[in-house]
Amino acid sequence: MKIIAICGSPRAGNTEFVLKRILTQAEKSGASVELVLLRNKRIEFCNGCLTCDSTGVCNIRDDMQMIYSKLESADLIIFGSPNYFHNVSGMLKNFIDRMHPFYENLKLKDKKIVGVVVGSSGKIKAIEKSIDCIKVVADLLEMSFVGDFYLIAKNPQDTEKNPENIQKINEFAESLIS
Image (cartoon, rainbow, N blue to C red):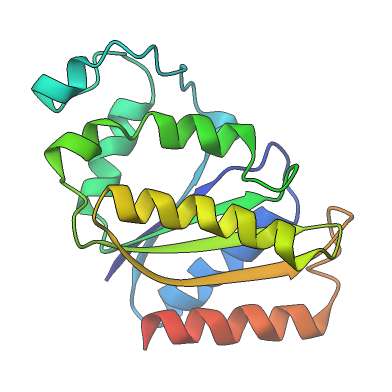
């Protein structure tokens, strides 16, 4: 199984920790894994030219070109984001906007997708809104949404310092690869 995780966090904190932990557990079970940190990539904004509607290819030349092929070769795609204002981060939303070529060419059809969200407010409704955003991506691209995982954490290292959270992450990772 090939798993790619897309991290939409602008800092190295809880979201990245959760994704790394999931990938580590999956790798122990024999999966091929990769983490893409969007904060380290040059991804331009979609300019709405709609060229991809007719060609199936985005004409903007940036790091998305490399990421497109990684998404196409993955069996499971994990979107991870902190919860910002009841939604995914702007960084992940920009990435999602740039996935428009897959809307027409359906190269991600039937691929599995998972949502991972870390929120700080403790308002489950806010986190559900972020998960809903990822579910919309799955629906539009005809992907198979196979699960979601969320935690409440405020400070950057809250998750890794909490054994209960680590156990929850491990159990979720196990459910993905079993």
